[in-house]
Length: 385
Image (cartoon, rainbow, N blue to C red; front, side, top):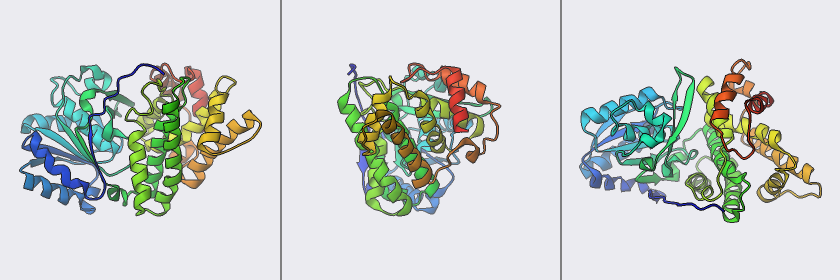
């Protein structure tokens, strides 16, 4: 296990009615920028509840709605402009990962003199940020308790992740009831996203047993509760277990000390940058193709453990067992959770961009579990096509 420093300063308020803790924002100033997406929070009552709590706490609100599913740098710039013009003290995001990611970069950009795209390209330029608060409405990205954000500039077909300890939320409200209205598509995609986060840390060469076994437990939790949430949207226990597992998938507990290798995410970011597809669906399509591409004598034991400890499979032939584990993942994603099984199913009808996408992904996946060349990634795209 490698040396590491783990600091997770976010205050988590978890459970029914946890939104009442928004009154704690009064300790951070008197004016908040409320960031949200397409307006579903107004239909399900979260918006009115939040405004009432903030009003009673003496916190004035300025709004920025319309954050995109793959948040755009244009929206970040708009939010930064509002913060500077309105003398905003803090950011409150209500929504899923895209909304919170957007809010994070707005919070950093509000304290930066240049273009916030600079901060997307180089997180080391973030030296301060406004306090960030969030109410999570979609279990998927884990951004409610991590320092990362992903922002797109579709005019350049670019989607990049950035990160800074200054972008870790100060406080996150996690009420599983707020995920009841999440669609089947987004429930499935969110489950795939958190599973991908966990697997990116799980497939490593390090002897970090503690992290490995935690990852296996998280994956089993997701595999058990994803289908229940899909078929019983108001099952509190299923939604709660998914929400908490998704948070732990990327808050550092299963990654620090084991040198996680982010291989599939850089490839999917290129799919989203060029085709604006749903992130979790892209991950579900690419992950089995990546696994089959890198399965070898050198990685065989990792996939045998995956088959045995995650899927509960057994057998005497390690190769058959490894393939069976990958097949179990396919069946879970494409049959149990009903996600699209190939790139054509999400509207990608040709391979004309595979070369340039592969080169960008190759540049973004240095030090991966199994080093990938541009040619390797093109083959993975083709296998997923």
